[in-house]
Image 1 (cartoon, one colour):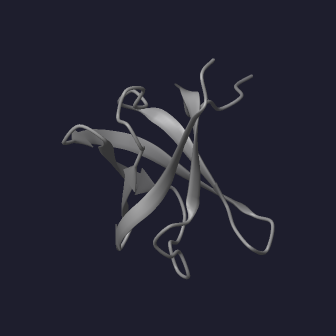
Image 2: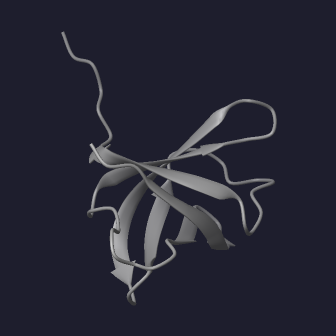
Image 3: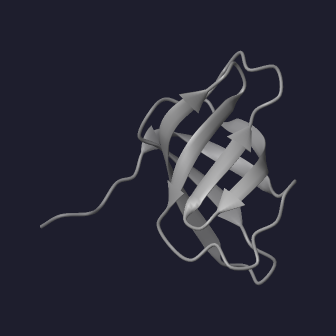
Length: 85
C-alpha cells in the first residue's frame, strides 16, 4: 500500500484540506489519513473530495482543536477499518 505524505492547508471545523505536493499520487476517496499530534495521539481523517490537482478535502473523526496549517499528514492507502466480531 502506497503511503501519501501531505500538509494541512486549511481547517474549518471538522473539515480539513490537505495538499499533496506534485499531485501525482493523491489518496482515493474514503481513504484514511493520519495526523500525529504533538501529544502523541493520532487524529484520523477520511478523504471525501478531490479539490484541484493536488488537494483533498477530508472530514475529521475527532476534534480538530489545535490543528495548524503545515501539519504533516500521512495517507494510509486504504479506507478506515473497524474490527468486527
